[in-house]
Length: 401
Image (cartoon, rainbow, N blue to C red; front, top):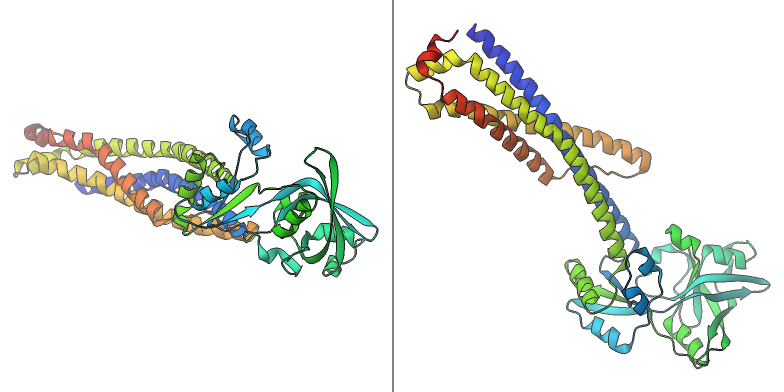
């Protein structure tokens, strides 16, 4: 009978360990998915821009009292020389670049073709050089055009054929007396680029050196200033500090950092909520362990009486059941980790084949977390049954049938 009870108890413990591992497995997969998505988004952003870059703008008075997307859509003020020097003197800033951008005022003309540019921007080191499909970076009185614009200017012929050709660039502006004036400059197409950003493809942008744009305005007696300053950190660990210092100085911090922070917050919120829902199964597994140990105490009452009769102390009995609950937690955690590794591997293969990305990132920290949490829950669940077993009366336990 005792042997039969031992076998039954062993089977029951195995089932409890497997059942408990389901809860840990669910939590591990949710955390790994959230971690994988966050890392994927960080990698995508860093691949499209320099990770040491902090893009800083100067908010207008109207934008200072607003928050959210509306504030981001409002045009900012131009930077003064003092503003640029303030940013340059921020600790751990290696060097700075200024960006001057003209929105919706630029037109390019070649032969009988006329194409407008949504943006005309000065070129900086932050530009992704690998996007240039033909030609090279522009120098003085040269311009870099997007593929679609070059294609239209060439009459839908090969856009690369325009490299080295001269075109006319016109900018519609207002002079110091608020009268309309047209700025004109003959520029040479130095190269053609194709952006991988869908938003950039929707808004064709031409790039030219700062001195070329500034000279066009100076010829008409108009002063133009930069609307963005790029501060490059000496090390990635200083990027957030530079961004925070710029905000404290009254500037708008990195827009990409703000967007990334919001996306990361949303992903973390979703991960926590899903992990919390999955964590309900941890509570269920704790209750299962509690019930199993109580049943075990009842079934082994006579054994407890014999142990007490031959000299076992209360704390010895307590340690037996306490150790059993702890081992259940450890094995539940180990099972969960093994299942998580296998499932993560299979899911990543599927995601890689289907979408070309692996989103399940099961780190060593999560493996340790799963085992520790599983053990703690089991230990807590085993406190009451082990105390009950220790308090049993030896004489009554020996007479128990």
